[in-house]
Length: 450
Ligand SMILES: Cc1cc2nc3c(=O)[nH]c(=O)nc-3n(C[C@H](O)[C@H](O)[C@H](O)COP(=O)(O)OP(=O)(O)OC[C@H]3O[C@@H](n4cnc5c(N)ncnc54)[C@H](O)[C@@H]3O)c2cc1C
Ligand SMILES: NC(=O)c1ccc[n+]([C@@H]2O[C@H](COP(=O)([O-])OP(=O)(O)OC[C@H]3O[C@@H](n4cnc5c(N)ncnc54)[C@H](OP(=O)(O)O)[C@@H]3O)[C@@H](O)[C@H]2O)c1
Picture 1: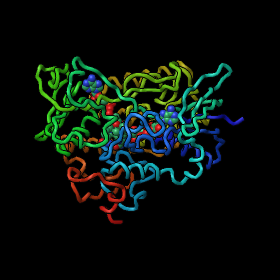
Picture 2: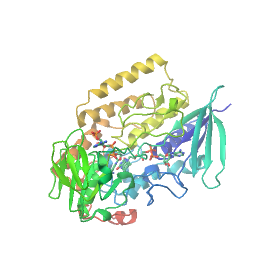
Picture 3: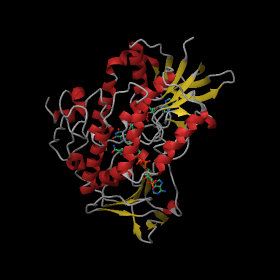
Picture 4: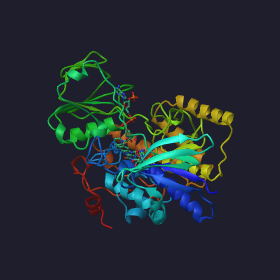
């Protein structure tokens, strides 16, 4: 009998898996029956902006953390599917940095050729509520149709978890924070900068959200923006109106004390403190936990749940390469499902996981982190026919971007990079990023006549 696979989540990872399965079927493979469950009304995952915060239109937790003025934070040349160049998608050369809607358009365009077949495999507005391992083998998956409110439980042989891990905020606390008189908001609930205009803002957390939101607020006229780091200061020459402070120790009303003993007053606090792995539909023994890591705990090859290899995860690793990484994982997962990639015994899996974990602990900076994830993508791809990514060239482009950001955080998004796939040099956007309004796809494409 045909195996049944439950895929949970139809963001870029889930879409990549459905596409990879369709391609294998076209090439003559016998593929399992896949039912995909997607809580949102459309595919695209994080790339579906929701103006709501907290609860969505069905009363479910809002998934996306994206905001109105979001542009991609690395050059598109670092996110390019090797078999789907940006030039081909847009029919012209465009800038290295894209606004959110243009990036979503590209991700959806990549699956267009098989969309008519794979979309019907997705049950939209349907949330998976529980996955129960069965004694006789397989899983009972309970899902709820969010429109009819009907719940059904069905049997599947395997489960693929592709629900992302940037939806449930990590919310640390500090002594006295409840005495702070202004707004304390997590980045997941940030949609636009206007509420911060003219204010002194403390941004806590110095990773991608911390960097971008500090800049967004500065650009939109915040009176002053301080970014508080935890591990280490950022390599950024802050412009006037922005600065950096060490870890927050506590609050006394509007006054904040930092780890070096210094204090300052703020009107608002924006927490860019990251996210938690959160899988409320999985029993504890199947649920990934821990911080956002390049080698997450308990996943063989970052994909197969060691404790129960019938469960696979996509997109659970920390993302430097993003779309191409998700695609490499999807091809690997597909070939595990098809039996083309045999899952080795427990001892061999453990040895492999330990080796990658140990290698991760030796990473001493961005070049080493990129080399690590590049090697990981190559390792996955060596088992499949996933389109090959030139990981060294992409890493070089990332590092060019990093140097540009260190030089001037306000202008790095104006730089042009060269595609590692087609060799095309990106077009220049006629307006500097600091002066651009939120660009819709239509407005954006007007800037680059075909
Ligand atoms: C603010 C922000 C900015 C980003 N910017 C960039 C960028 O510039 N470039 C880049 O390449 N990447 C960026 N990313 C990374 C982004 O997460 C990936 O590009 C990509 O969306 C990950 O895809 P995914 O499918 O793994 O997860 P997601 O996109 O998170 O999709 C997961 C899907 O699972 C569904 N789901 C969750 N729970 C359930 C359930 N119980 N039942 C059914 N369905 C469920 C969700 O509705 C969602 O559609 C950004 C992320 C964030 C948070
Ligand atoms: N396109 C864009 O412009 C854009 C914008 C935002 C986000 N994103 C994407 O969104 C994803 C998530 O990024 P993220 O930055 O939200 O999460 P993240 O990369 O996981 O970073 C979380 C940060 O929170 C810090 N932190 C946690 N607890 C803290 C505490 N108590 N005090 C101070 N700092 C604390 C961590 O510090 P340590 O370093 O010390 O652990 C880390 O720097 C990434 O994929 C990113 O690319 C993209």
